[in-house]
Image 1 (tube, one colour):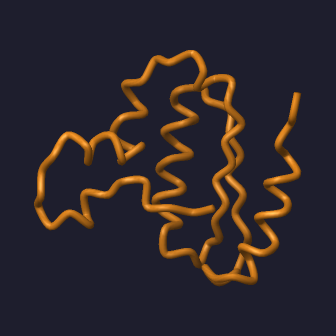
Image 2 (tube, rainbow, N blue to C red):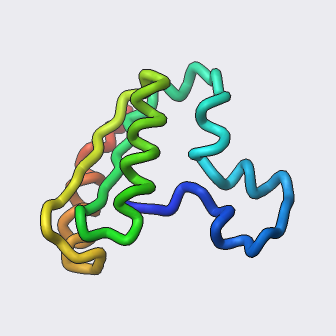
Image 3 (cartoon, one colour):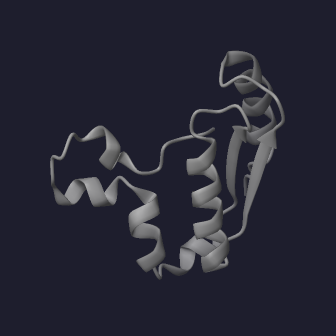
Length: 98
């Protein structure tokens, strides 16, 4: 449910390979793991979310790789507990157990 997806802006110039592996917008374009195409990714955000643009960028990255995902944008909602309370049960209901 929302996210920055690129942690470099929080690192104050610090460089380490782990930054790359914690920034999906950096490592996803180069991944070829077939399991990516078996995932059901949900990006939950709102147009008032402080990370809205990051969610759009990740959606675009997933789309470019042909990875199935759903960009769920809640219109005119605050990035806060009331919208998360709506999202969480809905997303959990999508989990399929074998």
